[in-house]
Image 1 (spheres, helix red, strand yellow):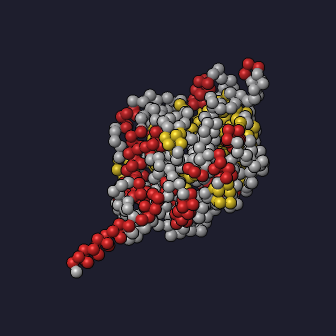
Image 2: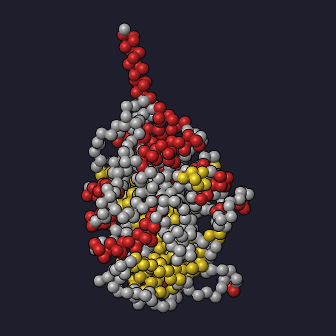
Image 3: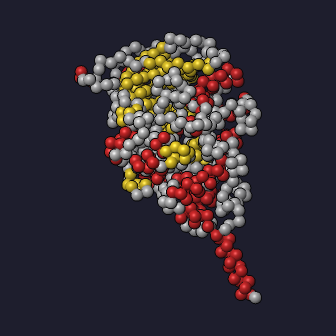
Length: 599
């Protein structure tokens, strides 16, 4: 009898190891602590500062094997390896050794905070529930794409439902803390003030079905919570903002950045609150406090505009993800205009956004935007090579092929006093940032009065800009001129166009106009026939200015046409895309806006 009892206890123990009883979601204290491993404040003070700012490029939207979808896709790079990649070192993606030719200046790993604890159990030997059947199943996926897709859709459905919850083998928030510790440790190990900057960050991933209502969350320093608040705890954006405000009240400095609004199906810039009630002043003010920037471009499509709704914009059809469910208020330009209406109605503009761009790589490969090398995409097997891009069904919509949904993604540019956490974060706060479609176009914009019409050189122009005006991201209360300067990516094409995009609210309707302000050129350098210019500068004044109308102005810079990534595929690998896939494209950059506010 005793032997039977012992065997029963052993069997029950084994059973519980394999099949833990439901998710453990008991509350765990989540204080703000300073997790810095060095006196970064003192080390940052030793880095020389440039009051006129230097330009730094980075990628602030990166996933590794601690994101459930990246793990399911077969990615093995952890946060540390992703930072190594950003600094120019090769890593392995599936069966390929991959590196970028031009290292980044800064990066942030933004793994999905949903299922952090579960991924810790899956990845780490000896972790609670590491031997659970579900954890074993994750590790058994290998390169079985049918199993990968089935599991991915199952988890996406759970995370997009009203009853979002942890997976059954979740062993509590102590495992979430352990996963977050790994992310923080990688950021600390790879931070080198003045040379390479990292941030504590994560992605809050919500939505309805496949609609994206996502935010990346960034901390200024290592004063962070013990674990991130995910969409499993904060199920709406209002609850997320409330959590971020609680973090700030307890000593953290933190912001959220919406992304992939192009796939949001109306929920990124909604016409009503999550519970269906009308947008009100509290919602607008809370959004304004928490979201200073927006991601305008990334691998899953462009969010500036779509040709469906902007037939007046000849350059709107740029890497559009043509969804059957997209609506006009999925796009950033619409939000900027709507914000002006809210400004008039409530006195607060919730969409006074600066711009960034990113890759949203799910390979642990920040900055992987180089198209003319052995381009491997950003989503594991789905777009790993030309054959996959041409033939595979897209993971989010099996009615599409992958080539219809993806592009290499973008980069974030920031004008900062130095390459440190403090300086880059403060540049983000003042919105002295811009996004590119993957290249390294240089772009500066100032709004002000009394600028010189001619400048002897670049330094004179920048001195004039800061002395008499304010840079991109600023708010001005009087009529102003725009002083614009742009230079080509040293390894990219010449510049073809400078455009000012203006939006305003006339009291009844949202309005916009595109001004081509490209300065005249005498042709290519040294009398050549080369198209475009290597550098452009212009002083522009709005001919339609109305001091009674709130307005915004941002700059769009267009390169001359170059081969699109799909055309490189055709030339290098012999695949053949359908005729409606463009062979050439105009890469571009978008400045953060400058706003005019009525006195």
